[in-house]
Amino acid sequence: MDRLNGPPRLMIVSDLDFTMVDHEDPENLSLLRFNALWEAYYRHDSLLVYSTGRSPTIYKQLRNEKPLLTPDITIMSVGTEIAYGEPMVPDYDWEQHLNLNWDRDIITQETAKFPQLIPQACTEQRPHKVSFFLEKPNSLEVIKALSESLEKHKLDVKIIYSHGTALDVLPKGADKGQALAYLQRKLKANGRVPLSSLVCGDSGNDAELFTVPDVYGVMVGNAQEELLQWCAENARNNPNIIHSTERCASGIIQAIGKFSIGPNVSPRDIKDWGKCRVNVLSPGYEVVKFYLLYERWRRAEVEKSDQILQNLKSSFYPLGTFVHPSGTEQPMSKCKDMMERLYGDKQGKQYCIWLDRVSTSQIGSDAWLVKFDKWESTGEERHCCLTTVLLNTKQAEEGFTWMHIHQTWLDGLETKPRIVWFL
Image (cartoon, rainbow, N blue to C red; front, side, top):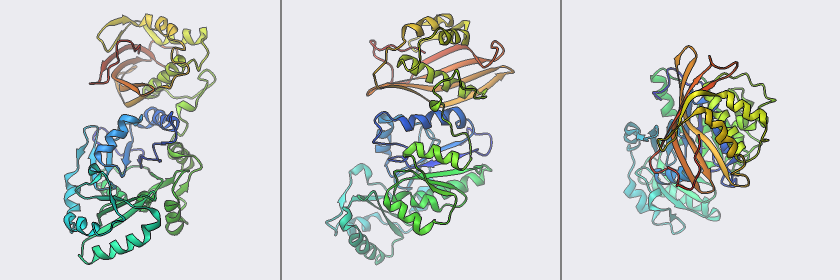
């Protein structure tokens, strides 16, 4: 949160599984659409918050499997753990708050009396979360009996059932909604109340997000019946909560447009840049747009035309330098030739590029320094480098000129010798 100079323009708080991430979309098309939109228009002045039932362990596994952006804040374990930034610094004040009238040992003893409750993996048993699998036909009877059993011990706990399979026992003061309300109080205390907030979910453990005051809400198109039923009973007359017609991240984009809270056309939705007249002179938008063209060029999804090659040539400052992650240098003037040779080399392959953590600094009246993580994925192989680009408007008739590019491998994410890495 410290990277922002003032109140966030937008704060998106999204569940992950089947909300931000569509596990039925093997090419991650909706997630990549959201990534391009966020990095082009929102990263510099907004907050991205993930709110997931996953523990830190399997949250990190998901990040290694899917092209997820780095969030500013991560709410995990159904609202019982909050962490900040890429290093995931824990919020110890929140943990202390949850200790009140919480006795994990008693809960473990009482839940052991129900053979229908199958404990989840050890990684999912957290200090303030006890988790089980429970078949739907048994759910109502078991939840009622377990609630009565725990009430006898005068513990302040709650039971959350989601996806028709997962049951979590949590402190009464913990859930995704209360974790978000706590974050709102922290933001307010620091004078950084978001101008708009959008909460996004698909299942029962997301319901509490929609009870937080002064937020917009979207139940994505593939939302579970349990969440739709909750909304029908508790938020039917709330015009700020919608059920999108599109799945997962595409439904989030749809909600941004529905509520008119910011740009909602992802750069990935623009198929022909030559015919597009989007009037955006933004360094962040520039790098996102360029790498989308680069991806389509290598996949042969754009025509190999002299016009595109000429545009590329004019975008690169001929006296500039490209520093490869290996440390080798070459003149920017040769980038166009290398691009021409790479045309279509990824055609027919599951190849994609996404940028993460785009940050921009204006270092002169017509010069910007842009830093970001540039990711490439082909099938299950993923590689990433920290990229720094110097952009200039003085050298260009319109738009930006790329003056210098410097790349450095991130640890463990360098390419193998046989893999071509360029730009």
